[in-house]
Length: 347
Image (tube, rainbow, N blue to C red; front, side, top):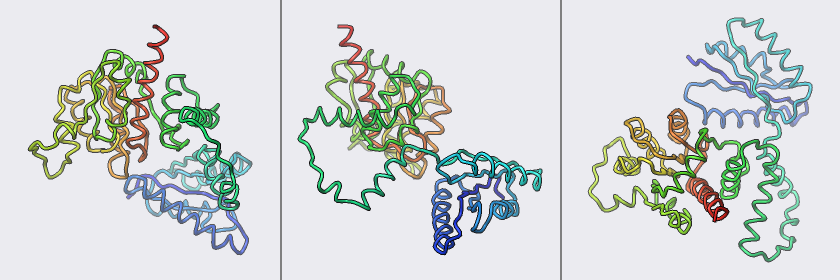
């Protein structure tokens, strides 16, 4: 029996196509959401009008499943009357019908920044010649980078309300990934940036889970601060290493580092099991100066990052299934860049 049920609620359509396409679209959204939620959460869909099931019918269905809490997610773009009046009124009636159940309405999809990319994709599909016929100016690598960062800044401002140092880190993450939505998934512990910068200035070692992350870190700037860069897997490559049946080479390699992680910058950009192994070390008393925890994938990546955020250790992470080597590298390089610029100003 599930504790929580979720309803994806759309407007609905009474047209001949809408009768077919609305249920098909909502079924696809529902299945996609369900695949990313923890096991056992009931997910269904409903239409505000014209289509079935209605919100009342979907709620009744979830009640028969024994859920105690129903989360209603309006699949709407704008907070118009449906969001501000109609749906809240329906929820009040549902509360009267089911007084022992808890009903929660989420924010609508709204003007999430990633929708800008979707708008562009629709325009490109309708008029691909706009791009085919566009003249691409010849730019230097430096000019390309600056133009990219200017675009990122326009996308983020003023939606991203964080400190300037954190903003610089987030901009580099978005720039490296090409995904503006990541900006709103980055999480910092309160002292993450300052602790990370202090570690760089002290010349703390940088340990990564995979070689791709180690290779991407700006070695020139790191060496200027006397920060060594080591890959856990590379260190144990070729060594006879006992790996249990229920672990991975990445996890075993992270455990191999042991006390060397004290005061170090630990960067996980690939393997969720490496982050879980690092968390076990932290629980045993190991204290990294900073954990950049950004494993990617659909198995344990989200959960490992949630566990990281529960620890009393400075961290930067990206919630959910996203992450990866490029994002982890961008985070470290942003900190190195900030430290170098401050050092230059002092000099």
